[in-house]
Length: 112
Image 1 (cartoon, one colour):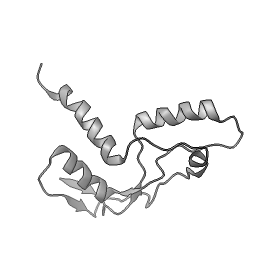
Image 2: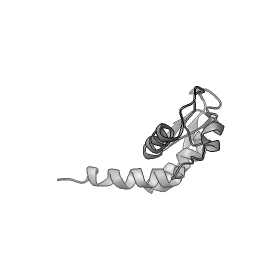
Image 3: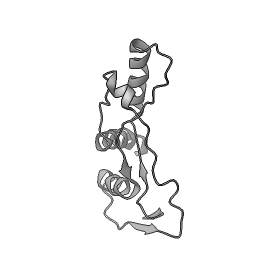
């Protein structure tokens, strides 16, 4: 499987259920004027993400990074300090979120 770029750029991921939980938490617990970023507060390299996805779905092939393709922005991480100070944290790790998502997708792929 070919991944565009070097695999070194860093990204932040958040499960949609954690996003919904954070939005509901803020609706109940925050009425300030300062914007609050919602995110996991953790970053992972594209290469590590690709390897995690391969493990999650059982892909045993090889990964190749096509450095002739763009990496994009080197880093994308939201400052979630205010959200954490209010007492919110995500319920799922990236690995858990990927596993849950893949498990829920599998039945959709089976013939009917």
